[in-house]
Structure formats: C-alpha cells, structure tokens
Length: 474
Image (cartoon, rainbow, N blue to C red; front, side, top):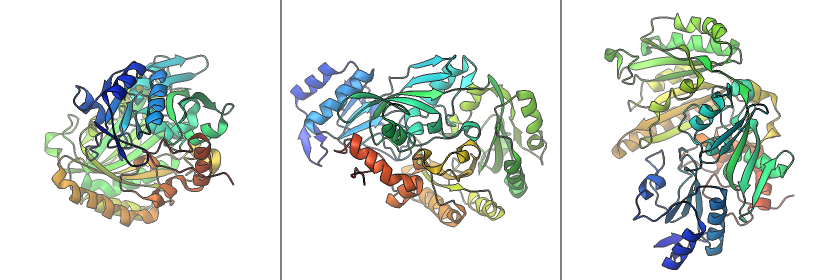
C-alpha cells in the first residue's frame, strides 16, 4: 500500500514495515481492507472524505510515542484524531498514518484538589459524567460527543464560560508526546512556552495524551433547556434576548437560535418544519434562584414549546447532541461579537428566513464574563474582547445540496461580519478558510506561536492542522 510522506512523495508500506509497526503498538493497526478502518477514518463532517494509509488505534501514551517514532523513521505524514468533531476535518489526511486516540477515554478525578485528568481520546460526556459524581465540572462545550482535545487546543467555550473563561483557561497541565517522540509535561512551571501554545494555539506542537482540568462546584442540577416561539415573534424574542444578555448574572448563559423546527417530541407536530426562534438557557448556580431568573423567558409571548426546567447538568450537556449527528454535511461561518445590536438581529431574521435545509440555524452564543478579565496575551486563543459568538451553521444531508447551503452561509456571513470584533473562533473555521481567517482567530499570537513551533516541532511533523510554520525567535 502507498503512504504519503512529509515531503510530498509516496512510499510503499512494505509487509516488513507493517509488521514492525504492529510489533511496537498495543492497539489495533488497521489497513483499508481491515474491519474497523472505515469507522476510524471517517469524521463527524461528511463533507470531509479522506483515506489515511493506516490507522493506529492507540491504547495508551506508549502507542502514541511509538507511532510518532515510526512516522519519523520513515518520513510519513502523520495525523491525529481525538473526537473527530472538527468541522474542517483536521483529524484526517489522505495517505497519512493516522493515530486514532478514541480508545483512550479514561478520566480520573481528585475531588480534594478539584482536578480531573482525562486521556486525549475523551469526549466531553466522558469528563462530565465522572466529574459530576463529585458535584464538579470544568468548562467544556455544548455537544457531549465532541472530543476534549480539539475543543481545548482551540480555546473552547460552553455553558460555564461566562463564569470561568475559555476551556483552555481551565487547563492546568498537559501530557504531551513531542515531535521527537519524547513525553513531557507542560504547565506554568514545566515547559511554560509549550503550555502557553497548547492553550488555544491548536494541535500544532505535539500529541496531547492527557489533559488536567481545574474543576468547580456545579450541579448536580441546573436550570436549563429551551423555549421556542414561531418565527413571526422573532423580532420581539431577539429584543428580549438582547435585554437579558445585557443584565444576566454570570451563572446564566443564553443562546438565541433561529431555524426550522425539528421533529422533536417537545414541539407540536404541526410546528415541525416551520420556522421558529428559540432561547436556550442554562443557569448553573442555585436552581431555586435559577427558576426565578428564567421566569421572564418562560412567560414571554406565545411559545410553541418549553423545556426550560430543572434538570441534571449531565443531561444539559447532551441536550443538543441530536442536532449534530456524525455523517451529516456541515459548513459554518462564524464571528466574535462585541454585543448583540438591533441591526444585527434584523439581518439574522432576514437570513434565517432564507435557510435552505431543515437542519441549519442562525445562532448567537453568549460568552462574555470571565474571559474578558484576562490580558489578550494570556493564551493564544486571545479574543478577550468577545462577548458573543455568531455562528451561521449550515447542515444538510445530500452532496447535491452542497452549493446551495454553502452559499447561504457565505452570503449571510458577508452581510453580518460588519458587526464582528474582527476576530473569529479557530475551531469553527471550515476547510476552505485561508491564512487571513487564521490571523483573525489567533491575531497577535501568531509570531509567538511560530517561535514555540520552532522549538518543539522545527521539522513541522504536526502539520495537518491550522498549521503555524516554525520561525526563529527574534
């Protein structure tokens, strides 16, 4: 079989090379003819369809080390898959040696120190379920099937961001396999330059096989869920949303969305497929207080559905899972916002009415709070002036509908980006985004990231990502 090399050539993976690799690895090593290869090589976004030469399903850090060393010895292109949830498909590459971490999903919680240690293949739900045993949580994302690795290395935000910052702000240390095939620990005290780069600079510097997160007291119950209204009430609902966002305590995170109503059991059947506007809320403080704070949402207008109730935090964390299934086609355009303006809401309503798929949505995420209190250079994720995120989330089923849905997202974005801070979220960048969009996401951190890259990966072994090439420090 042929494999791609770092210098762009193709080489033959001989039976002797394959046997050597299998001798070094505890986990399965899969060729395209092997059972399990197709499941491992595919990622969440079905628009990404690449075929690695081999897949190594690592069982531990030693497998990651062996995989890197084998790739270096033979000059092979290497890609790393955690949850495989990145919209641009950064986990996979044609002809590469793929290290699939998805069997490495152990989580260990120290409730006294309030630290969770999670292996690099964990999904958000793995961490949430273990930390909630102790009434603790870290700042993770909105979909429990997302991998922690990509989320954290790109910054990450979720329902707890307003209280404790980006996901990467809660990272206290990381276990990293370097481009040399060495194992190091990165923290504020050990290899602080590498640690800084990992907190939002993307998967550019090594393979993180373990993440240590600071935990906070959350749950076991929160007040969370969604209230939906017909799109005819969108102007009034978004006006309410703007008002609530301005005055919400940090325990409350609010998301506004416009989309065709899904065939969900909490919505009447005659509403399914019709345009709706919704406010998704999560109050992570005292539930009794939370019920009082969300009451104005529940009593507003004439809702067609209301599941904003007291519920377990773990359930809240998986509430959106059904809207993001693996194997659907996705294309997003996104911007950070300094505020939600009335004119922006008008544009959102206009473009929500033009949605081309029953699965697409216009979404506002509230994130302002703790992240705004740290300096811009605290970590490469930067964007400390952001208070909301706009996501134009295209989602559909059939390849023949690609052009229409991509154009919807691009057109809406062109007309709404004027309201941006100028920044964007690196984890929401699609496959076709160029260097200017990476600069919008990482901005003033790029020179320093390139210097970190030069120290830890001067040969650019880890390149199937939002690649920042190494440069000498100045």
